[in-house]
Image (tube, rainbow, N blue to C red):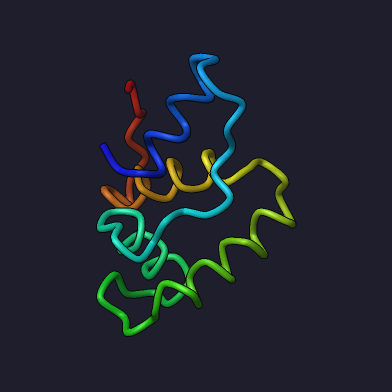
Amino acid sequence: LGRFDWAAMLSRYGFAPAEAGSAYLTTATGPKAGMRLLFAGNANASVGPSTLQARLDELDTALGVGMEVLEDSICNWQKSPSAFVHFRG
């Protein structure tokens, strides 16, 4: 379980009033690849975590849904970006 998921889980189940302030991209794998795909058009693009986080922060400012929703959405989307797959987890 990653840091981001841990903070989100503590908040979701009421153990702590926590909200992830970032997507913790330095050590992430799936979310980082998904954000590279979204923002650069290639999951293997040479875009660093700080640039990706800045772009994600801009997206969060525009949408206002929070880092947990964005990180989960992008992570799930990158698994099948060209076809909708209903997430049941």
